[in-house]
Every structure is written in structure tokens, then in C-alpha cells.
Length: 93
Image: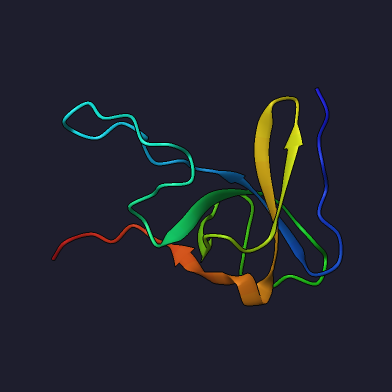
């Protein structure tokens, strides 16, 4: 198995895909999505990146970044202006 390490201002995320099957059982093609943004789990960050850590779930421009494939897994290489934010769990009060 190969790994990839981010450099400088790059962040590498493993894509989290939403289900491509609707509740009614219709299979949607990969280019059709209900979400206006992408999601990914951070696997590596470059040395110039702040406030993001490995394991964070990021929201990013759906068609931004550069897709790469290693060992059959799709990753996305992002720079900071393509990242919308970090998805955090909150506790209901």
C-alpha cells in the first residue's frame, strides 16, 4: 500500500461519498449529488497549514482541488481557499 504526504499549503483528504442510492432505490450516477459541497477526512497536512489536523472532516468546493487515486482510493488535494470549513459535532443543550 502506498501513502501520500501533503507539502507546503496542501491538505489531502479521503473523499467521503454520500450514498448514490435514493430512498426509493434509484441509483444515481457519480456526477449527480444532492450536496452542494464535498466532504473529506483529512489524512495529511502540509507544514504551512494551520487550524486543521489529521482526522478532521472538511467541507470543500465540490469540484475544487485535484483528485488523485492511490490503490483504488480517491483522495483530493486542496489548498486553503478551496476549504469552506471543518465539520464539528455539537452537543444539544
